Length: 379
Image (cartoon, rainbow, N blue to C red; front, top):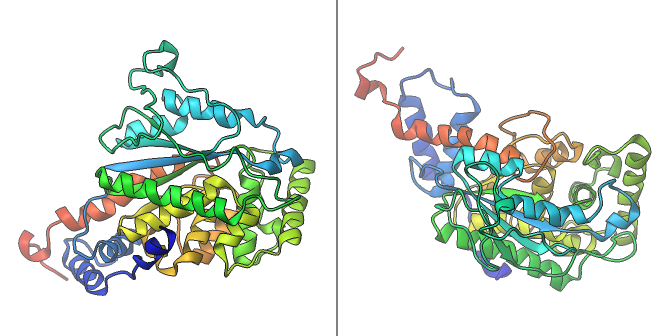
């Protein structure tokens, strides 16, 4: 599946991009007055191979959840059980991502790709599963919530293993496990697109997952661990310095080769990072845009682009995470984030806030009159 997907990823369509630029020049506004939105619309036309590109609706958020052996190194003050508990919260509709998804009209699919603890899954008719008037209930294992299911978060059970190994002691994953996680993401991308999604948004959950994200960013970009590592959930100064040393220790142990993305994911990645890389690849192969969330997503995007450089054409940076590694990764990817609000929650929250901007960029090409059609004089 991985090789077939990579082979299906091609460059942006130049004639469609030229048509989009020409249309932008004829719309009733000064040339360039919509700034970055204009080039975004051009890129999305190139991805779709048509001008104007399809409106990015309906939208689907895919939250991949997994746990991390490196948690044993005390890089996070939060207990590992919180990963499973938050999955339950997502399914009950009570997390920030759910609130933002309801606002955006986006579906939420939660994928257990490697949660270590038993999941706290609410029953469909359990009053505890309710969160306001729009709360949803969990679907059965293996079900994928389609874009129409914007009020019912769904659970997909696709467990590769119950959490990674401690990357400071041994490889976090075997190559076979890393491949399996990537292919989970590819499969989820295909199922969501087949269900009607016109844009995919990345989400993640995993206590301690900013530590492997920092290791991935350092491995793919060559920066020092200190430049790639942030405070995650808000660790104190001693823990932060310790976290940097943990990332350095893992990189020294494995010396991952950025030309071997599967090897990098296996050595220092997480199951949700690998699955998110697969989501990007799967969407790119289907020529559907992927709106990235925070540092976990951008670290995964680095892996996806290492597999298939043309995949970057499908990627839109939703926001600039407060985690410093996110800026490093975005710079390497050549992406400018749409918003910068100092967010560091994850879950898909920043991507959801950026979604209306992406929709607006495309809607301009569909709905704004040209100078000729509106009878407006040009300069």
